[in-house]
Image 1: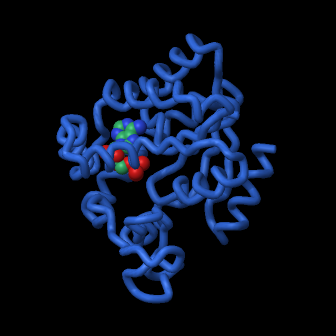
Image 2 (image 1 turned 30 degrees about the vertical axis):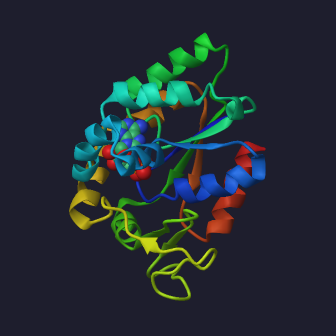
Length: 213
Ligand code: AMP
């Protein structure tokens, strides 16, 4: 099963993807995570991506398309995968369709997680992530027992560089102008599965698994 998780920054794509990995035993492919790892390593890809990411802009299509093309052909993707944060533009979606056609494969579902834009800034700026295990918390809605420390593994919690108000505002504008058109793109293919992304994380997970089953 090949799934795309679509939705604005802060909709909960990463959180749902991590739960879906356990449920369906297929990998999460997060282009944001791959790019952040490259930035941390200081690789040429990381250096190119960092400037775009810090501004809240998108990394060039050619860069992310190359990353995904290589990743989906890895052996752990043979039974399927969940794309989280890709595609983000119509040219990326077209490139994905092209590469899947060459691989005699296709996307089965596009889960569109819907959250009103007023809610997203607070969700993003309060977000904290564990450096070691990647579990997410929120300072208001899901605080850890001890500030700055992961409940699950004791790792250090950090705030993403791009989760400040200014960058979040640009990221939301970029989403509206460049990513939102993908809803119509996948509607035309009959693959959009809209999900209400407001409420308890487990309830949202139940909504997602219902449409995927
Ligand atoms: P995310 O973790 O998905 O919120 O992505 C963080 C940042 O990585 C984005 O703001 C972009 O700068 C970059 N990025 C992630 N995925 C893509 C993509 N599919 N296309 C272009 N840029 C991306």
